[in-house]
Length: 178
Image 1 (cartoon, one colour):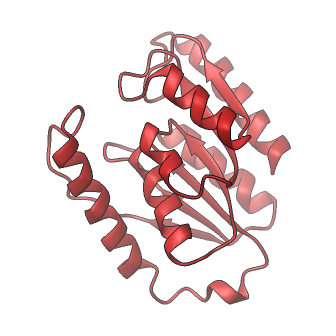
Image 2 (cartoon, rainbow, N blue to C red):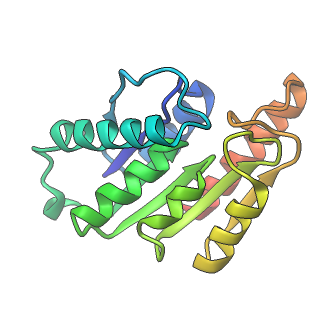
């Protein structure tokens, strides 16, 4: 069983579509978690970030209320941005043994499920999370980290060919890890 916990903005379709295809190829049942309706101006505003997290977690609980977790052989959460926090909190709250693919995790991602079986991807020009916070969180928790030089919170650099090469590199890493 594989679930998607997205960030607060738009979903980076390429990564999620390809990630979903890889998960399906590896035998995972796909469940999407389409929470939303966040306030604007979350970045840099701790109160709005907390509200967005709480809202996403509450929506996730409702959306996933009927999932029979005990029937899953393995659970994989693929998440992005605030979704990495929601995924960790949800797994911890439900006492689920989960594997995580974290696209653009945030500092707060490491507050939950610190011993997670995870792999992380971070852009070195991500204005939402410092390189130091993500490197430290991954190092302390033994989580493999792939950093994308010059990439933003969408793991994009602004150069289409570079982004395509990075997308290939990231998806190869995800595929190998699965």
